[in-house]
Length: 226
Image (cartoon, rainbow, N blue to C red):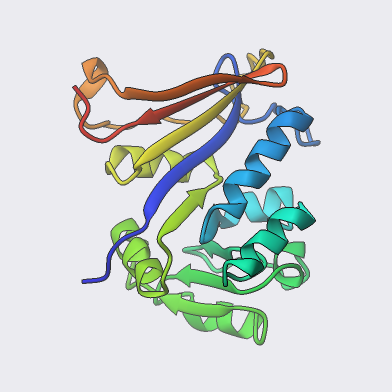
């Protein structure tokens, strides 16, 4: 069995736990210092994963922006940018999204019923692989492990973060808390309702806390909760 990657859930949230507000434009929770910190996390990773909903909504390039960090990756014998990964059950992807036309290698992980649809849509733009009849996150990690991914950063969305926490598959939670309040019930949250391991009394270990710009970074180790 392949060695699964070390999994980091990475997100910026408001003080009340939201990833965005309910408006049509993306709410930028991070400041310039935190965007630079995220760029460093990406540069240290082998792969970046987002869900197809996040890809459609945010249309990200998902790159290492710093030329210095890209040069350091190349000097270490690594690709200029991490592998970019998205996961889709329905196969509803847009060939014109910026995700496919910037950076290096891309992989789409999907299910049996959508694999041919995705291959047709993205012919020549990404490697497409199925993990079976439904999305199994353990099999997703196995697939990435087979591809040599040792360090995986997951940047959303909230549904994926929730599933990884509920299945106890995250090795680290990296939260940057912005000094903002959203307070909109229809806005997306970092984590949703789930049966989390250990229940509501299980405490996670704090790895690090520090200020980043006007935000606060908190890193947790969710496995081995007490």
